[in-house]
Length: 247
Image (cartoon, rainbow, N blue to C red; front, side, top):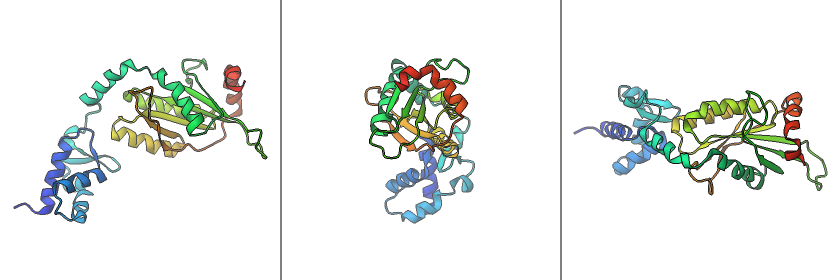
């Protein structure tokens, strides 16, 4: 009769074999507990936390807290993800620009005005934000704060997240705050890496339902840090959209 620890390891391997994107630690523990309700939770925790060390031929950590079966180590996009991408073709990325502009203004209250932009409005290789907004002081403010510029890069294609993050970094040169907005059905590994990068670079992170432009269900994961952009580039780019954004 296998010991409890061996039963836990076998079950963990079975679960990971059936989840190509991997399973996060807490979720894996809960799934094993459902299979073995009589096992003490501490025994499960004590067996699961270092599976990548005790059975390295079967389990590895794709990212912090994310266990994955070794048979999927080299895979990047699963058939399920590919199907989701095909299904999303009918929904244009541009369809999410205005809903996110409204979200910035009305829910997050990061802006007093936000507009859909996109395209090549800034006329250079560094890219143009999909959404840009400003927060101006209100007439009722006793102490008038400075005008804040907020930019956002929205991505519906889960294969383009690295490019999207690079574009978001570029926007910091003329924006006080920057957001990257990515599909919530992105792989757990990609979401974890993007989240870590956002925390390092001070960029805000939003998850959303990239299949539904009417109800995108924007969900904030990381708040952006305010910083001082380069005034030369602020004026260079704001002149191109002055009438739309500042009128």
